Length: 369
Image 1: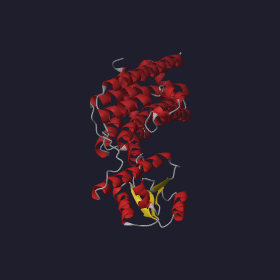
Image 2 (image 1 turned 180 degrees about the horizontal axis):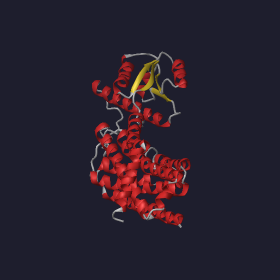
Image 3 (image 1 turned 90 degrees about the vertical axis):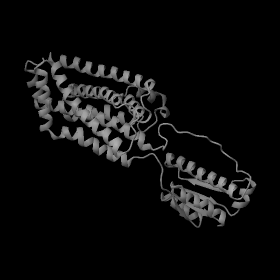
Image 4 (image 1 turned 180 degrees about the vertical axis):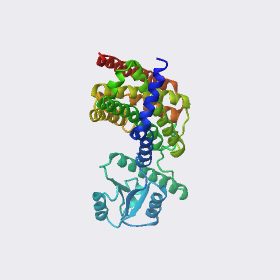
């Protein structure tokens, strides 16, 4: 046992070196995914094209419009009439229209509705953000005008707000840690399911079983090798998150490593279980994508808020390992070592790792018989 296991791990590393696809999945894929999603995916709305129309231009309307130019959220598009603006809105060239009617000043003084906002609601998230940004510019202009002209204070919204853990409200700060969960799923489940299925197809697995090594030693050799490979991918992803994307790591690195190790064991167990059942690269890859990668991407809370999902889907997410890992990553990166949040998620990963590895061991023994 003591001599056979290191020999098996050495054999696995030799296979990894001879097979560039394994190294690409472990080290190149994380870099590509983090660059694509880190730079390409954002839930923020910036530089939104917005049409500005004043039916009767005046110093007041220009003063209000200047707030949209300064905000940084909009690319103002001055328009002469509503017909042209509506055409651009329908064609998708602008996301909203701010329309000031000819009696803007009179409505402003009498407390009516002096501005009209029309927003393209096809993209509901962007529409809500545009509404909020326009409301903010409008309220700031009212406050500034009241100070400059010594007018009675505008109807005030006295909101004293503090945003914890992500004060800049940068979506990248919670997307990038969540992406590490997707990357670790790929490295663990997809890599092991494909590589081991390849051994079944080539007949090398049967040749290995004909030697004195036990099935437990074979599984330990596989797990140990790809655990080390996955740890390398994790370190690369964390380094990119911290130094390239400037995501703060406020918690303990070793706690992050502990959570990542548990999740990697879960992913490796899933991959081994898939390869044990499928024994075919194509089938194993399809099963790994459907059962591991897609749920990790859709149902882990990385992109979509779990609390907003239907109740049945929320219950389903409890079966997705990435849900617990995403919670660990986002907590350790952005909030720190918040143990009441971390303990339940770590415990869930321990149970899942025990289930997948135990089930793989059980099925593997049956295959030998």
